[in-house]
Image: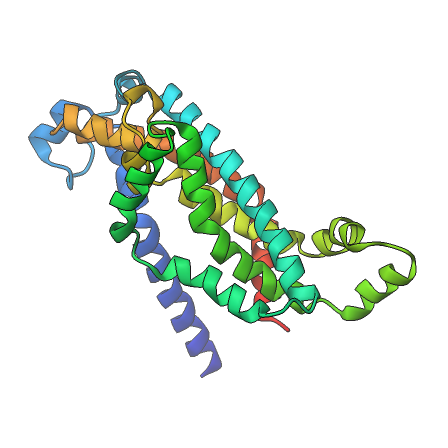
Length: 273
């Protein structure tokens, strides 16, 4: 009976895994097919050709190198600023008796509950009013502002559960709040920081909504809006669009693989008390 349950579990999980990765594999296969093959046999047919020219075409026509650089120029500062500010805020709210700290935490989190669509016009007008419209700085600020509440909430939970004795021992040794934060709290929350860093990198790097809201110039567009422009130029060249999508996915996959161990560790800390 137990063996039957184990076999059923593995079969069901295998099916779920296949359904999860099937669209990804489908896009990769399409990216290596020629235009004539796709036009003649359809997207859902088995491949009858193999070509690398789609990647060259996507790279050149979408100017993906420039778009990838723009995405990295936005994503890396936004992730570092978001996690840095969130960790400081979470440290103060979790480890010290700040008045109305729960209210402050809830107010920060409530900002993430607002649908971003209703804020598109106000954010766009505000950025234009202060003179930063169509700049990467504005896009960085938007991502930091919208991610700060969620990251603070998550890190607050991790820091709150750390033993008080560790902080008290550091205080007895003469460490101040800044020293305790940098030398004690941050090293202990590294798995959580890595997990949030991997998630935020993916979210920001793949963003489309805010990119087209505060950026207007084509040479400043990140990679996702660049792919959208590629679809406008080649309405039926889905193989080229698929190739561009695969190229754009490489940085996020690399970041996840690099921090995979810390990511899993962060999830385990949150699941096991």
